[in-house]
Amino acid sequence: MLEGAKSIGVGAATIALAGAAVGIGNVLSSLIHFVAQNPSLAKQAFGYAILGFALTEAIALFAPMMAFLISFVFRSHKKS
Image 1 (spheres, rainbow, N blue to C red):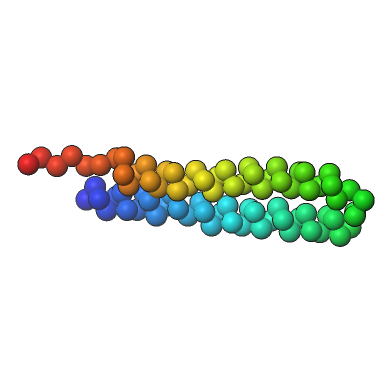
Image 2 (cartoon, helix red, strand yellow; image 1 turned 30 degrees about the horizontal axis):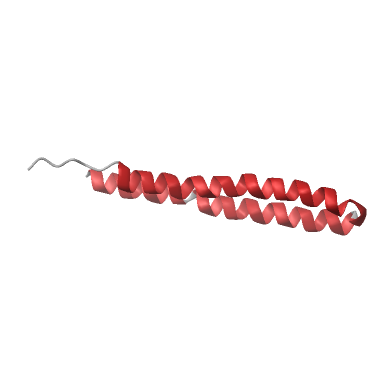
């Protein structure tokens, strides 16, 4: 039963990767729209977009880390 709960936990932890992908797409889409409307502010907007990309990517790195923690660190100790 514990192994099944671990599998569900790992699956739930990896769902965050889909959210991070959507977030990165939103950041880059907003950058393209902003630069199309204000080309003179492209350099400043690019700096903010890189910051948003980095923060979103950090969440994408935490999700697999939690999945690996759940699956490999929290092991069940079976009595022999």
